[in-house]
Image 1 (cartoon, rainbow, N blue to C red):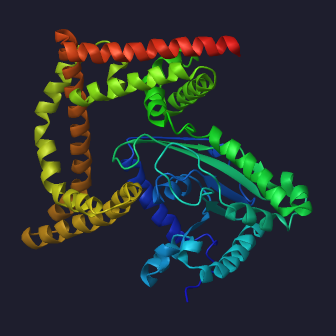
Image 2 (image 1 turned 120 degrees about the vertical axis):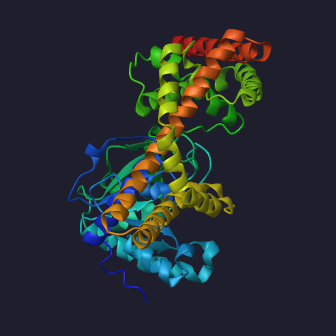
Image 3 (image 1 turned 45 degrees about the horizontal axis):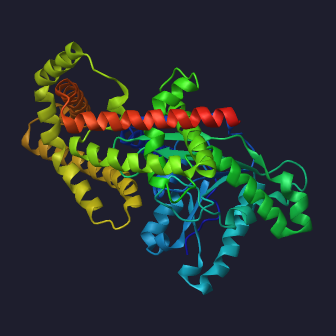
Length: 456
């Protein structure tokens, strides 16, 4: 029997582990922006409630970037092996049981819920995904009741007075499984569970429903929430293609993840309004997106490269010369890290659920690289006399590995921009058609937004 009685207590071991994984997390994401950390209170019972689209990464995104040490609830099937269960308990994760785990296991939830109640009564924090399981789309799905039962159980000690807070946390991934993608984390202002306590006392179902509806509205505001299933794919691409024009419309001069998020939210809002009033325009945009995807697939250029008409050739040539002169760094970093990289790629290639890919890449990568570097250090210590050079090798491995990664990223970016300039100059039919399609999309959305703004 694993002891979880003190799982919510602050521990140095957890803090050190979290700091190590946070370091790996910041390497995993090329662009990471966190908004709203000032909204997180200290010494107050808090439930962190985030959208759930990327398996374990969602919990890590929430807990790695705050001071508090929240206890998370996760599905019980990952606790089956005792060793794994011990590790998860050390990481302050407790199991929650579902019908699919067996009807007889549901009774165990009462013990878990009573424990979470004590955690909140002691003014600690917990983390839950109100959607219950992870999805694979930028869309908020219906909530399960578990979070709200726990919230009201924790509120009982405080009655109608302010007590338990729910903090909606929005997670916006640019690419769920991709290494070196981007992630925006938005901690919203707290919701007071006490606001719904009168309704809950009168009718539990009513109190839970009202609290759930409020959280759904609040969390929807913090994420990219494309609710239209018919045009989901179109809206998902249109929000990106129209980023810069919408930023200009909103007079937002920045280009941070949060700035782009605001622009995308506004674009989706206008597209959804247009769907209600003139679906034919949306159907035309849907067809244009299909044309754009078919053409862009041929050239393999990211949509953001089309944000400029031309890139400075002089700067591109300078970058190219720099990359050529630093090839030895690339080769050293590549050759000393490639084995670990291939092992990680192999471990993720067998996953059936692609929403687990980034989680496995991060956790397996952290463990594999650590042991791989230690192994190379031992081999060097055996082959090289003295302790200094093997130690310097050990220190250099992650540094040159990261420099090689940056070299590769800069190479890809420079080559794509050169390719874009070249294609622009030649302006062959298919590339000209691709640019024309993008311009048609932008003009079409311009018209829609202008009309919708007049109506509002």
